[in-house]
Length: 579
Image (tube, rainbow, N blue to C red):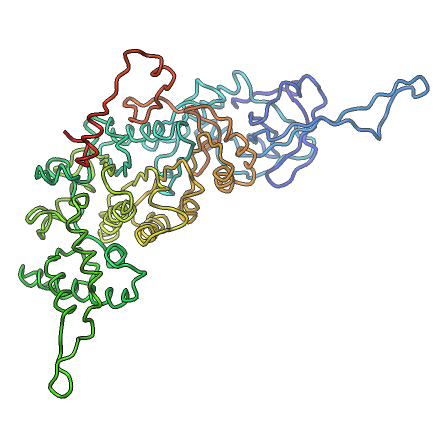
């Protein structure tokens, strides 16, 4: 039996016009009209038995019809009848029975309502029963709970975990709207899975509070870690220069405004190839030596590269008449050499230039890949969710370093045998910092190219993206456009709202008007992963991220309030927050 057991007397109106997925219903009863609200649900008769079409109210209008006056005009009693119309966007079909399964909701429209078909409001017990169908429709193995529906707080809101990560997702919202809260809610459920595999790119250390058996924490090595000799076993991550692609190396070490930049790039590429060849030869890795390229992740000695650059920069060659003359690159590599030496001596970049024996062995890459990419069920694997803290990475090279981690993850997945790939999700926190729409440096260009490739090709190799940002208008449009799932918190900026509206289906365009009025912790969720596009109140995570808004007025009014200015100055000087 159908859960929507309406009688004719329950009808609020009749269909007046149909246009693809949009229906206009005429409501004759004024009281019924007053009870309706925009974004509430309705059910409509279908032309097929055993089905009800489900729609969302988009617009309610009440208009006087001046051409149809009734009453005694001579006595001054002129009454204008009213035309009460409700515009509805159809979002799916409720089927009474599919095989042996009763009450199935599908986001498809096999039919449209006929003219004069009756329309019913989904309220009270009927709404509760319908929301129960929505909550139970996804198999238990695919469920990811976000919270409860705003329409019915008793109904738990689930998204399909497979489709959420297969087809990428974007989580957006102004600062303080609840993005980190939402992300933490998802991460906690991922961490509970027996073979979870996710990496969180944490820009500000917000997710340090995520603790438990399912979590592993790493931080990119800071000056304090370098001096103390901390390494991977201590949760400290080095990202050596030799892991960079050729384009990344050039963007970091070659000044593109230098008139000798083309020569510097060419010479450096030759020197790097020779240094990698020397490493492989000494280690007797003949199988790799036969096929490696400049982009192959093979360690090499930067000292050897600098030595070759120095040699070429002062090289004199035999000339005519027995006189020596300057070589082709004499004096043209000076700025490149200076940049390389300056980068090497910069203590902030110690994670790029680790001490001898820290990250320069052939087996180091295997260890770091296992630590970051091995699923929880893998032998020796610990937490299925790996959180990498980038808070001590200098902002000018942040895109380059984050892009290096993204490239590492994607490359390992790409080169894994097709039948043995274990899926991986990348959570890109504060994505506008390193996947910008407008690249202002070579480092940004490199990161954009990496993440755009993941967005476009990641599904084939089992890499899912979750793009998290408070400024979606500043994130690469290519990356955002590839995300088929949207979790939008409150947005007050017009440009950001426009980006979200472009992601909404045409039939749900009116949902964009909700963006500036959503409550803190409330989200508009639309996409392939959720059956009912609607507002959801995100449930509180067990471990709240360290991004809570400080209560200014309360702290200012507290005579016992303290600060840590001395510690701050000390941390600033030492360029680390680890005592």
